[in-house]
Image (cartoon, rainbow, N blue to C red; front, side):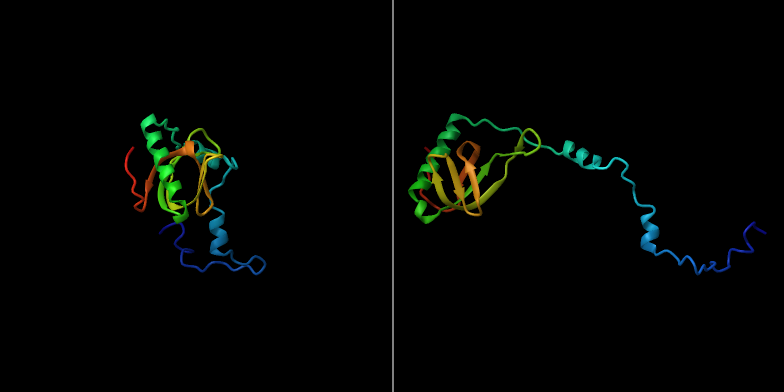
Length: 141
């Protein structure tokens, strides 16, 4: 006969002063404890990868410039373009290279910025690739 055989099949005692704890509250007792508050976020931020800025060749810069001029000639049509550009990271060195397809609203020569729909405003120096999403009689220079 085992040590607890007499009580193993008895029902749990009921205490009227202290009602049974809900399963949710019981589980919360065993939830992980973050002794170093905010440390997890810093670990994530440190491990997040960014890309270095790519320096374009003069040929690529000339191609982008020629395409910007061609787009400017068709600006009243608000041409659809696909742009890959450098987006600097706000907290670390480097950044990312998002690609968007949007309509061109304005080419600001004085501020050297490409203004697209959805409030996208890209500096000419940040453009890595520029392709028409519609035929504007583009050709390589």
